[in-house]
Length: 418
Ligand SMILES: [Zn+2]
Image (cartoon, rainbow, N blue to C red; front, top):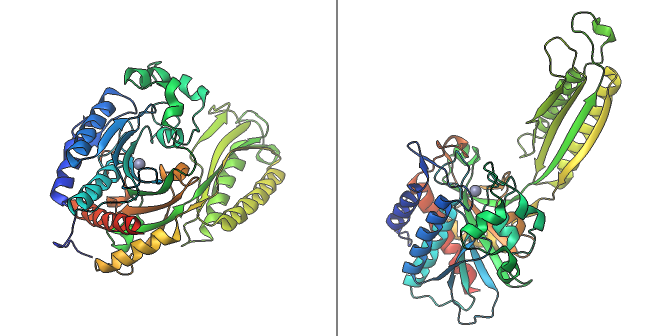
């Protein structure tokens, strides 16, 4: 698929906006640091708000810190078509994670307005507050917020400077006591559409600029603790040891083997964090805690992996004389994209000369995850160079973003025509 001069969307305008926004909170040559509710984040929101207003949208920032630009429908009471992503970033983040979804949505809506379209349903472009969760260690804040899922406890969480979420919101003129006025009542969102960089290597490997997301894989997060017995590293013979780290190492390898059996399926399993006690050079490790992250778009396959892993953990403990303690941290089901939206994308991709566009699942979360609980949703992925993200080196080409935006525009148009 190549860039096509017959694109409807104004890609020069889009590219300029992505570049201009990337200058706010800029770090190094290509990085961005726009932590949620920070002065940089607010400056970015104000800039995007001004572009929304230029386009003719009615724009406001709600009490969760979400930026919302509304294109009124001929039936203002009809459920809204919600389009967007986020513009906050990781502390050491890139220029594209989030912004292409907000600015691509704005470009699509602006083009539809310039086309002279009048929708019956209202359309809103939204930049969700604090998707990343880096500052207060809990993300998807704005998207959970509009569903009424934010708890009081979350407001008291503090950042590394001791500033609470409540305080950060108040500083940007948001009022947590008014949250309920910013909640979308059940049935008020018709559907949600998000474009995002892939943040993985699948499209690059397939040599494709864009792809249709089939769903967001639900993660299973466990913390396993293996307990053995500490002893002097110099005196306890090998056959008498109860070495918790040895058992944990075997568990890491076992997880890898169990998950890899399903390759090339998108099943993934990771041990990303490990704590060793007492963590000393000359003591046999007594206990080791480690995290398990298991994800798949196919719940049966994920469950089968989990079952096998449990059997393997038991076997390791028996063999090594260890005790096993398991804690379940998160167990989410996969959330599937709506068939009717994927069908529009497929047809429109084919109209763009990109028949056979790849379908892929999303391993990472997105704002679409909470929103998927209340309405149908669809997602478009744009190729990430080397699969890099959450890093200043994150990169997607203007051409790939343009292709994604054109497909987004066409999909929105189809959704508004039905
Ligand atoms: Zn993102």
